[in-house]
Length: 117
Image (cartoon, rainbow, N blue to C red; front, side, top):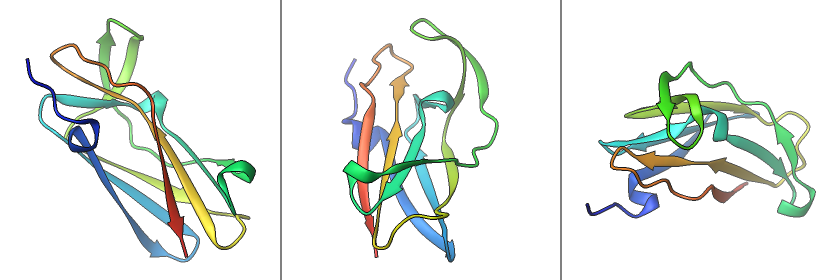
Protein backbone atom coordinates (compact mmCIF):
# COMPACT_ATOMS: atom_id res chain seq x y z
CA UNK A 1 0.00 0.00 0.00
CA UNK A 2 0.97 3.63 -0.47
CA UNK A 3 1.12 5.73 2.70
CA UNK A 4 0.63 9.45 3.20
CA UNK A 5 3.46 11.61 4.52
CA UNK A 6 2.98 12.08 8.27
CA UNK A 7 1.96 15.75 7.95
CA UNK A 8 -0.77 14.83 5.47
CA UNK A 9 -2.02 11.89 7.53
CA UNK A 10 -2.18 14.06 10.68
CA UNK A 11 -2.52 17.72 9.74
CA UNK A 12 -3.12 20.23 12.50
CA UNK A 13 -3.68 23.88 13.22
CA UNK A 14 -3.99 25.93 16.39
CA UNK A 15 -6.50 28.45 17.64
CA UNK A 16 -6.43 30.85 20.59
CA UNK A 17 -10.07 30.97 21.79
CA UNK A 18 -9.27 32.98 24.93
CA UNK A 19 -6.20 34.39 26.72
CA UNK A 20 -3.98 31.65 28.13
CA UNK A 21 -5.67 28.82 26.17
CA UNK A 22 -4.43 27.16 22.99
CA UNK A 23 -6.51 24.58 21.14
CA UNK A 24 -4.70 22.21 18.79
CA UNK A 25 -7.02 20.77 16.11
CA UNK A 26 -6.01 17.65 14.18
CA UNK A 27 -7.57 16.50 10.92
CA UNK A 28 -6.83 12.80 10.63
CA UNK A 29 -6.91 11.30 7.14
CA UNK A 30 -9.32 8.46 6.45
CA UNK A 31 -7.73 5.12 7.30
CA UNK A 32 -5.40 6.65 9.91
CA UNK A 33 -5.63 7.20 13.67
CA UNK A 34 -3.82 8.94 16.52
CA UNK A 35 -3.11 7.41 19.92
CA UNK A 36 -4.62 9.24 22.89
CA UNK A 37 -1.80 8.15 25.23
CA UNK A 38 0.91 9.46 22.88
CA UNK A 39 -0.08 13.13 23.09
CA UNK A 40 2.25 15.42 25.03
CA UNK A 41 2.26 19.18 25.46
CA UNK A 42 4.86 21.50 26.93
CA UNK A 43 5.68 25.20 26.68
CA UNK A 44 8.39 27.64 27.59
CA UNK A 45 10.49 30.51 26.34
CA UNK A 46 12.49 27.86 24.44
CA UNK A 47 12.42 24.11 23.94
CA UNK A 48 15.24 23.69 26.47
CA UNK A 49 13.27 25.24 29.34
CA UNK A 50 9.80 23.94 28.44
CA UNK A 51 7.57 22.56 31.18
CA UNK A 52 4.94 19.86 30.73
CA UNK A 53 1.34 21.00 30.43
CA UNK A 54 -1.91 19.18 31.08
CA UNK A 55 -4.31 19.08 28.16
CA UNK A 56 -8.00 18.33 27.97
CA UNK A 57 -8.64 15.55 25.47
CA UNK A 58 -11.94 13.83 24.66
CA UNK A 59 -12.36 10.13 25.26
CA UNK A 60 -11.02 8.04 22.41
CA UNK A 61 -12.31 4.92 20.72
CA UNK A 62 -11.22 1.60 22.24
CA UNK A 63 -8.80 -0.14 19.91
CA UNK A 64 -6.63 -3.26 20.14
CA UNK A 65 -3.28 -2.43 18.62
CA UNK A 66 -0.65 -4.98 17.63
CA UNK A 67 2.12 -2.67 18.88
CA UNK A 68 0.63 -1.14 22.06
CA UNK A 69 -2.17 -3.52 23.10
CA UNK A 70 -5.51 -2.08 24.28
CA UNK A 71 -5.45 1.69 23.69
CA UNK A 72 -7.71 4.62 22.91
CA UNK A 73 -7.42 6.20 19.47
CA UNK A 74 -8.93 9.07 17.50
CA UNK A 75 -10.30 8.95 13.97
CA UNK A 76 -11.34 11.88 11.79
CA UNK A 77 -10.75 14.86 14.07
CA UNK A 78 -9.63 15.59 17.60
CA UNK A 79 -8.99 18.74 19.60
CA UNK A 80 -6.69 19.23 22.57
CA UNK A 81 -7.37 22.21 24.83
CA UNK A 82 -4.09 23.30 26.43
CA UNK A 83 -3.95 25.89 29.26
CA UNK A 84 -0.70 27.88 29.19
CA UNK A 85 -0.69 28.74 32.91
CA UNK A 86 2.61 30.13 34.12
CA UNK A 87 4.38 29.88 30.75
CA UNK A 88 6.88 32.64 30.03
CA UNK A 89 6.21 35.01 27.13
CA UNK A 90 6.82 34.65 24.23
CA UNK A 91 5.91 30.99 24.34
CA UNK A 92 7.06 28.06 22.27
CA UNK A 93 4.42 25.32 22.39
CA UNK A 94 5.79 21.82 21.86
CA UNK A 95 3.30 19.17 20.78
CA UNK A 96 3.99 15.45 20.61
CA UNK A 97 1.82 12.80 19.02
CA UNK A 98 1.94 9.43 17.29
CA UNK A 99 -0.36 7.64 14.91
CA UNK A 100 -0.71 4.77 12.50
CA UNK A 101 -2.34 3.71 9.28
CA UNK A 102 -4.96 0.98 9.44
CA UNK A 103 -2.85 -0.67 6.71
CA UNK A 104 -0.15 -1.47 9.30
CA UNK A 105 2.33 1.42 9.16
CA UNK A 106 3.04 3.17 12.47
CA UNK A 107 4.80 6.49 12.23
CA UNK A 108 7.54 7.30 14.74
CA UNK A 109 6.61 9.73 17.54
CA UNK A 110 6.32 13.26 16.18
CA UNK A 111 7.31 16.54 17.82
CA UNK A 112 6.42 20.00 16.52
CA UNK A 113 7.33 23.43 17.85
CA UNK A 114 4.94 26.35 17.44
CA UNK A 115 5.98 29.89 18.34
CA UNK A 116 3.13 31.76 20.04
CA UNK A 117 3.55 35.53 20.25
